[in-house]
Image 1 (tube, rainbow, N blue to C red):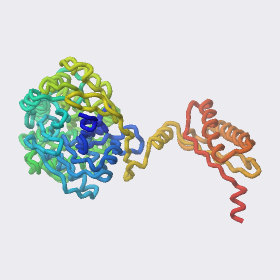
Image 2: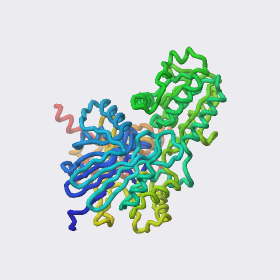
Image 3: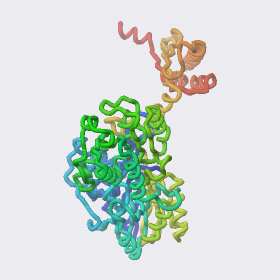
Image 4: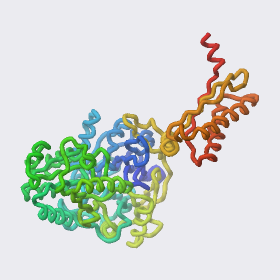
Length: 561
């Protein structure tokens, strides 16, 4: 078998991070893509989403056969509208819930796509070199699947996001099929690492349901407000069932929540559509007859719960006897904003339940350590590639694999852009591919690069300082002192002496540089940017973004005449 007969696994996103999942399998002239997710901006100022680098796919566009989706969360489907505008994807296969969410995304952006197909755990998709199958898993959204990829060189299984829940709200994971696959032989397991640092087993969703039921039983006469993840369909399903049993109507706030509930009702995942009411109807009912279901469990400033806590929501005002439930856990980086929202709620006098005060108010949709071991034991892979997690999560998952008998040399902790080569059931590391994230800034995709992000961070931290210099370039002299304008650096009225020093230093640097024989405008700007920046740092310990503006006044006057 020569090099052209190798099967390659290429990672375009999802390693060293939680989000942006995208993996490719290539054999000769065929490529299949596994998931197409986004990651959220975090501290990337002005950025809405971060996409994987599509350079590899663009260069090999004619080889792409299909995109396969494991489930309908944003970090697995969120990039599809952008991908379809950049790369030709002949077909997309997704489970039903994900398919509905994808269609809604495409409609929002006026993208027509006719080759979106639904699969289930009995579906098989065949190409010239690949045979694709699916394994039902348990996650916090319905229709979650692992994907089996049979290639000429061996079998690859990706778990997607999963957990093992022996008393789930939805269908059980297909343990039998996993065991059968393990008996038949799995060469490479690509497995979810999100909770690899958590010991034991994750809490069953039914335990969360019991806790919520207890609150509904205890506070029969209070209005209940629940904030949870809009995509946690099984949690929403239980809330609907609890409201039905307790004769409560449901008022929903938050576009993502409304969309997910609408899709889930149409798909048969949630019953009791008749419970849904409008805000004006909710305000006319007794408190014990109403449950408000809303977004904002992460303290997002514009989400419904944050506006309710601020008192700025147009339709719902808090009452002192309200019960507010955070049925969620904090996504890393959101703890401060969540705490602010909770404090505002307490100031309004309402009673607040969180996963910290009652530990069973939320459970993750991802596997803890014992569940990761169980997946490894069931599928019995020769090689393990942890995915979906920070480096420490990937490393711990690899260690769990070694605990389960996988040799250390058969575990691969990769980074985005890396690849593996599968040949005759043996795997080695392959070449690296382009890995520059694509930033989405409003309607602009890929126009904002790392340099712009860097400048935004500088401006956010240290502000901006503009140096305007009027010179007579032919006479090599500075006509007047440079004008210094600043925003976000210092208060001008309180730092006049500092600004005078900066003004004088800028003038001295420009005058000195003008004495050079072959000085150019570019030389002057570099001098201001570098030397003046160092001087300002010595004075203040800060490095504002310096913007030099050099005007050749004599030349401009002549041109006007």
